[in-house]
Image 1 (cartoon, helix red, strand yellow):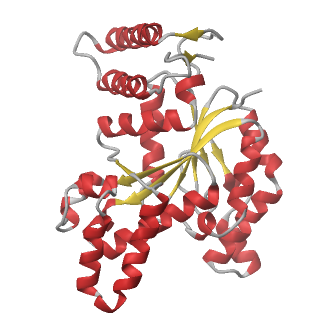
Image 2 (cartoon, helix red, strand yellow; image 1 turned 90 degrees about the vertical axis):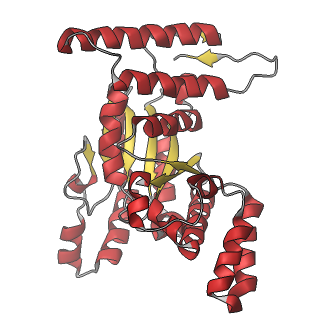
Image 3 (tube, one colour; image 1 turned 60 degrees about the vertical axis):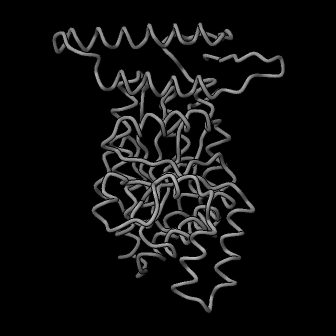
Length: 326
């Protein structure tokens, strides 16, 4: 039996993973989903979560008992979780029908070269759960060509290592201008269609590495996998756009739990009507509690997110666009 849908939030330290998780929970709850935040970072002792790995193993205790440094202790914690997966699978199975937001540690080696996270994800998929990876990258790297290429390569490595449906996002775009001048428009960094321009910038700074710079950018272009979604947790529109893509990546858009329980196949116009009724009901409920007013921001965000899903669904082999509501 399906346990639920969810997203695994990864990214370097300071990318805003925990902030994103905290902002996402009320956003999704206002769209009618039951959300559970899962903290799998043994070092995060301030997480606001529903399931916390620190009840199983905590980084500070491991460092003290085993005389390990932070990185070694974190690897030990993740391997300990890998060997005690029944704790995690049991905690998740106890919350059927929830949408899980899984906050991971920030050490990059866990997602680019270590096997523990891959084993943990494989166990979750066997529950079964429909998951995708959301990789957050701090947008301040856009101000430096070499740093941006580095995080792009890191994102590509993570995608290849985890072998999961994968969404990359440039976080904190609302702070980008305050972090220093940016040479190109935001679309240049999000779409990655003109990487040779960055090669020229890298060659000016380090001409002796010109061949290496070209090879690195060609590697990213040859794979053609990396694209970034702009994200600001303060902006409901960017959250809705990102969530619409996540819902397609993990399958929630096609088999998620909506306002009704049904195993029937819905035509596009039927699904639109269903979602309109759902948002009208939510709007009326909010107005009863807060008085008459304009359509709430959460309702507008949810409506725009679903419209984005509907517009981008590919037709099936018969030329029809159909949606399953489970």
